[in-house]
Image (cartoon, rainbow, N blue to C red; front, side, top):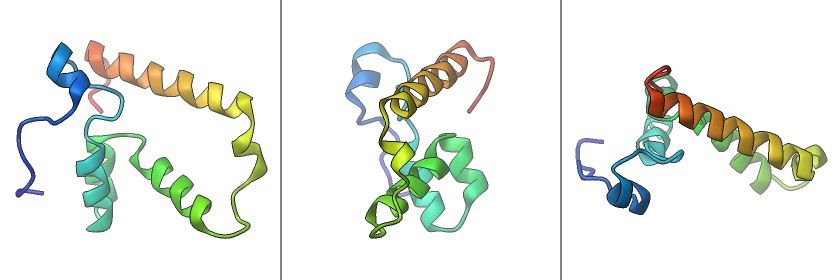
Length: 94
């Protein structure tokens, strides 16, 4: 991870100076690739669920149908926004 730029390439962060919901995801995925799940969760809480969803998606016939429903998408959107607001407020440093 030390070879990654220290300056953010995120357009949202560049414009607002605030972390977006996906900030830290690149570092998190690299940490998961290095088998460091604790570090990954420290970078972004949603790295582990995202990796699992990506693996389910590429595994033929294993993507659960309930994940394709609009209600699940709305639930995940609300959950991401909730944790993002907690991160921005400093209540939860994740």
